[in-house]
Image (tube, rainbow, N blue to C red; front, side, top):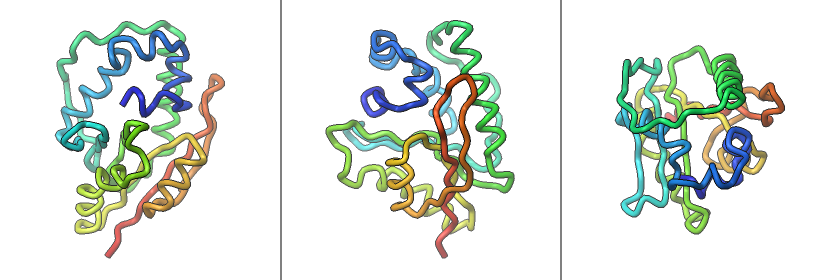
Length: 175
């Protein structure tokens, strides 16, 4: 995941320093992954070169999830997390939907269909249950990639505090 997001505009806005971003094999963002695992909707290839983390409709409250050694963040980063969270909340569809919180493929294994493979278990549930699948992304190339997988742009915005430009994309159920 760390290598897949090495050039990601949001991650590098939050963690602009290479040393901090790469130290401890993802220690800076491990607390996020820990929460995704708690939803029990995380999929990976057997060799862990691709991963997708989903949140079910309604984004159920997990309560207190024990997290291993969450890093302390400087005030500036906390302010950015708050701004980003506000944007996500504003642009999240009000209707019930699945949320693709993370899709990552190690750069050496990209463009081999692994992302589509990681999305497929929840896409099948969405199709069967008539629910959309929503995500946010922050590069034009990702917009094109997700468009190829059946997603369309629902909204666009700029994150405050000199944050990145983002797109909210939705995949309607295929019947």
